[in-house]
Length: 283
Image 1 (tube, rainbow, N blue to C red):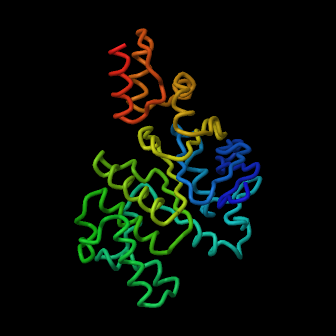
Image 2 (cartoon, helix red, strand yellow):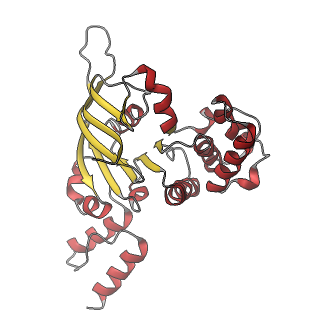
Image 3 (cartoon, rainbow, N blue to C red):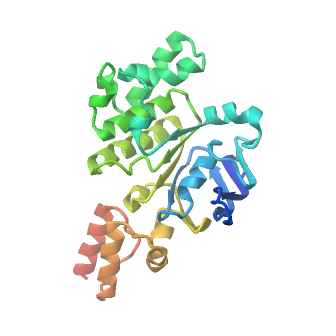
């Protein structure tokens, strides 16, 4: 892909094995290209390789075989690692592990300060990052007093302040309640929409993929499916065979179809699903 910000070629990765045992591959020959400016969701059950894949995108993990290229830079090139990590920012599962300061604005300013960004520019970046995650009102608050969703939005703001071209969220909503998950999703969609930042969201929550440009499903270290949300979620039986659920709307439509209702499977949103059910009921 010509305008790929991240590209993997025959990517393999194995974690070190216990003594006397063979390493088990976590990634097996993954070929992917993530388009610049896109919003991509990577789904998969535990052990599918999705989080391992995420960690190869900015050099947290280096390939056992094959290559990962970030904006054309090979992650195996040690001289390029700093530039790679400026290009791809990571947000992890537990926001408490990424918060380093006692005041919100100081936490968001931490990374750009370490990069040597001038003071006036840091102020601009902090204000803009907090605006994008809708946390401007909390600029002088103590992060440890915030809710889980608010903490994660601060962690995202800290990454935004580095001005990466891509943000990878590795199960960043896993520890949050539904309200917190919605807050984080709203923030990253806004970032993608307003700034054109590429977003790669690793998750096991199917409903978080409804508004993505593209959905990639990992299974046993390989790419099992790759397409639009509508293309992926209509493959209900294949997803279930991989131990995955489908969005609640698709599950309802699938149950209705089994009962003889003439409804489509690709009405993903609640509104579209309601319209489809209403239309079928009034035929």
